[in-house]
Length: 317
Image 1 (cartoon, rainbow, N blue to C red):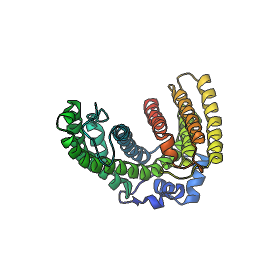
Image 2 (cartoon, rainbow, N blue to C red; image 1 turned 30 degrees about the vertical axis):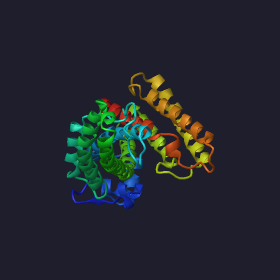
Image 3 (cartoon, helix red, strand yellow; image 1 turned 30 degrees about the horizontal axis):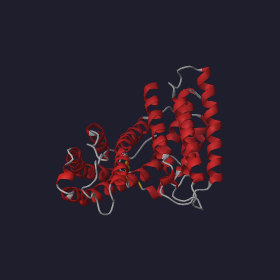
Image 4 (cartoon, rainbow, N blue to C red; image 1 turned 90 degrees about the horizontal axis):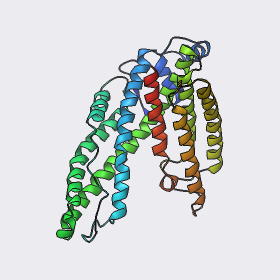
């Protein structure tokens, strides 16, 4: 499998067929035949794009913690008007986590091949906005920690708030955009890995892990992450299919101790989180079931599952 260094993939073109062709550089019929009959093991090009996907995903997963921080902060203060100065404490903000290593890895990948024409600039925007936002959040968090907002009547707090409400949402929006452009690439990488794992060693622990994450992705495909109506029947069908695959993974793990280094437990936890999310959605009084992401956060357990799976696969070699 060979990538052309100049190849540029647009997210509008990121179907399984088109990216598969980018991976293989072969006619689709040849690619399909090769996958069916078996072929070379994982090549350097697939490892290269996996390294790029991992660097981007690692940064987005950790940077996404800012979303939780911002949600806490906006529950403590009026999002439009900002602090009044009368709040006993405003502990929603804290110094952002040090992402020096993750930022450096993602920044290095932006200019590396293969070129992803929408994903690369989206990640560059995340990196830039993180650099602009972090000093401001750190400064504001230190100010709130001392309780100075009660001493100056909230005047400086409101100044911070004006800047924060521009900087933080812009960063979070950039993260969502980058995640949207990354997901189709990640999906096809996983499909390519699944085929390569089977060719290399049959349906072993690595194949089982990747098959499980692919099925988890199908659950997420019917969950309106950006808001909108959720179709409970489609969600139920996807969850049932995932549970069946999970059952097979657990059976494999029981028969092959340490073959998946405990991944099956993480996969079961993801299903539990999805069931809890479904319960919250069905209990929500509004009809139709809109705004599912606001009712139940499923992105965190899902990204956690993918991150753990990638870590286990790296460990298994």
